[in-house]
Amino acid sequence: RLVDAALICLVDLHRMPTWIVIVIISREFAISGFRLIAADNGIVIAASWWGKFKTVSQMIMIILLIVKLPFAIFGILEQICIWIALALTIISLADYLWKNKNVLKS
Image (tube, helix red, strand yellow):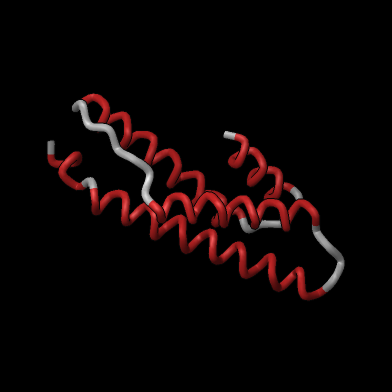
C-alpha cells in the first residue's frame, strides 16, 4: 500500500517512531487476513466509520509530516496527529474484531 510506503519513508527520515509504524502496518495485515478468512466463509465485511476516521487521520498526519512546516505550532500539530492516528488505528482494530467476532469462531 502507498500509505505503508510513506510511513516507512517517514521512519527512515526520523519523522515518525518505528514502533508506531509497526502498529499501524500490523493492523492493516491483521485486517486483510481477517477479511480473507471472512471471504472464505462467504461473509463480506464492510468498513466501519472508525476505519474511515483512521484513514483520514493517517492521510492528514502523512501530509503534515511530509510538508514539515517550520513553525513550532506545526511540530505540536504533527505530534497530535501521530497520536490520534495511532489511537484510531487501535480503536478501529478493536471495533472491527468485536463486531465480527463470529468470523473467528467459524
